[in-house]
Image 1 (cartoon, rainbow, N blue to C red):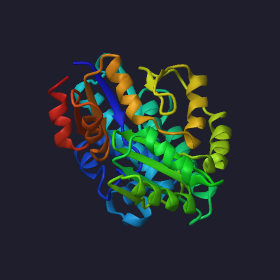
Image 2: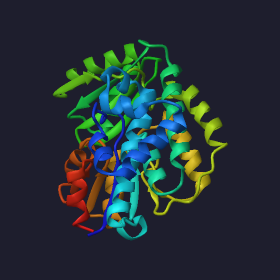
Image 3: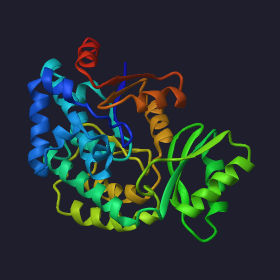
Length: 313
């Protein structure tokens, strides 16, 4: 078995996430307290109790999802002596999940990862006035088809592919009017369904440049260590270990496309046969099966999941 550990992105959050872990494992509870202290915010209470509207806010969802992922990693290390160098070939994360992956692999301290993601969420929200940007999922589209639709719908505005998640699931992002035009074009070109996503900003497109600038400034002042195992970066879909390259790619990631389908294919081509999703939800495990049916994928987010996974080490 050759594993890669993968870490979920925004959309996987849900009220109650991490609560069972904190109740079952002291190391998880201490992880959440460490994040609370770093942010000077009771984020853990929001994670455990809601309300959902506050948890879904980008500036809260991003550090919260990272906190759950890192708590799972720390529990596995504490309970089963998980050793990334021994038990994983790569780590990778979807959008904000790349920060979770880097923290899990020792590149970032937990406090730095939490503060960076808080800033990232705030900066992405502020980059575009509410209502001016939008995102939509083009269901049934392949990447090249989605790129053509986005280009034709732009008409001088921004409209580009934000996430290449899997075959048949591509997300576009940009000016709201351009996204609406793209949805009409997609229907005219035979796509089975296109839906606007309930997001507060147009992520992973050039409209996010102010957020990229903010992250460049913040990351310049953060210590980044070489990860314990290579990280497969969103914007290149290839492995990276050099801290200066990690820093640069995280800045590019804010405006760049999340090449998740290619990232998974890259790991498979390097011999990975099992993806283990660590954290909230099961989104990435589901995508793995759509990307390559030969891959085994599992999600570890609850005490029961932890117990089952430890038996495979």
